[in-house]
Image (cartoon, rainbow, N blue to C red):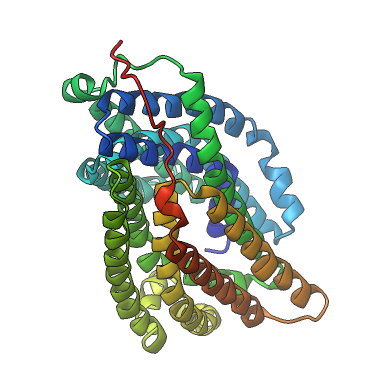
Length: 417
């Protein structure tokens, strides 16, 4: 438990910039689709695939330096070994993860989430089965431990990428969106993808890096505190991950509405999504705050209850922090998604980066290193960070500046080659 979150978040931080740029294809597809320019849809996705080739090469080059990196972080030696094994294995899945982000954006941008859903279901089932087989050495396979968990994830995400590519190149999509013909590199469109997607990618990588730094710092505080933090973040994913899907929906529908020059529709659907998200967050966070023990029960499986008790005692208190900041996280996620759907990526990036480091990361370092404050002070800064994001993005959304923004060209000659 102590090793999985630092290694996983370090891996994601490494290629999250490329994921952020690749996934921004969604906004291009949504606006082209809303503007009824289907031939430009396939061309936009192909620019994202070209970007994937460059990104994959750069990410894999990091592999030889994994052990040195975790040695520098300074966690206990046993944790370092586990972190290095997991991180090194996950690196091999980076190309497939980026392809999944790009091609998945084709379907989400068109408003076809079910294909992505089935790709994720298939990948999850494969991951679960292979986790059991590879971690514990079942069905004749060697016992690989945490490296087996990484290999299972790599295989699962690779299958999902192939599944999405097969549907992307289907006869129907090739005919309607030129997914097979529109393969040529287009310098201006590729440049526009980078211009709007790079701030999105930079926001993701620096925000994830700030959280990675926070988790690494928690490892310096203590292994028990690190394990409790990892558990709290894992439980937080019960509200966070479903809202990722809601964010994609908001970005898509705002993009389609603006492509049709209907900003009022974009504003109305954003508020509808916020009401849905707030209801969902509030309901689950009520249980987080008053019944935290319910969420800790799965972690007791195959563990010594007495050894787990110190971790559980801290995790219960951390879930109350999660309950407080998650209400503002609904504001953060929905309104930032709407701004991204319009193309307001620079504001989102600047705000997120500044708050992540000035409100969360740097104060955490100061109070721990200079004043010897512990885990609850550090989690207090995480809470303030999320609250700040929610307020800033709400205010920006209400200004209405985003209503005049577009990422697609205003006048285009359809490319039917």
